[in-house]
Length: 104
Image (tube, rainbow, N blue to C red):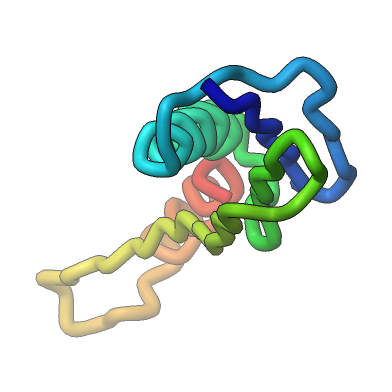
């Protein structure tokens, strides 16, 4: 089996110096997707910037065989339906101002 190296670039480059052995490129692709999915899940929970993440997988000769790039963003949108005719009621505005920083 050939050895492949999964190098992550997420603001800083993190070269993989150990690698792992795989029988074919489909197996390499599966590991790359699973690895990035795990890292992405943790990063989004911690509100990290994942706007420019990239993983390139190289073989033992240093040749890139797979590039996995993506952009992910989470945005919370608040919509209020008011029963009052006065949509700028001071109490509603004050409540919105308190809630918004907690969600950002």
